[in-house]
Length: 129
Image 1 (cartoon, one colour):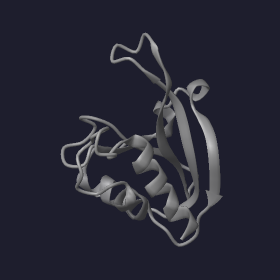
Image 2 (tube, one colour; image 1 turned 45 degrees about the horizontal axis):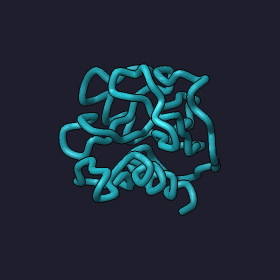
Image 3 (cartoon, rainbow, N blue to C red; image 1 turned 180 degrees about the horizontal axis):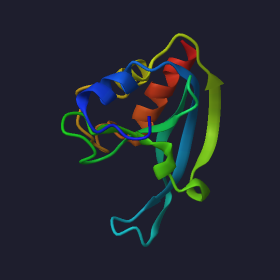
Image 4 (cartoon, rainbow, N blue to C red; image 1 turned 45 degrees about the vertical axis):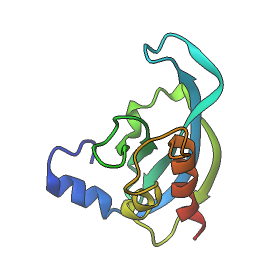
């Protein structure tokens, strides 16, 4: 399932079993994408589904209407920019389990700690449960 264009496909994705989770990071860039911001990184969780498809779960301002958390095909990642920091096999978990852990119902806020790094760490914690 490469692209979710309707509710049925999104529901199918959310109910899909996860085989592997990876905590991934990439350098943070300026809003125009031209300059890297030193020390700061963007984080997410790359999920490998039981069928082999890969998706990136991540958070940022304006990425989503309610929680600013989205899941996109991992093919959208620029592979050279992302680094896997930790990976874990997963059993008995769905995409929805990981999404629910990524700071549900909280808007993105660097000052309040509701940002991509916290969300990715919380989502990745599903792999250890």
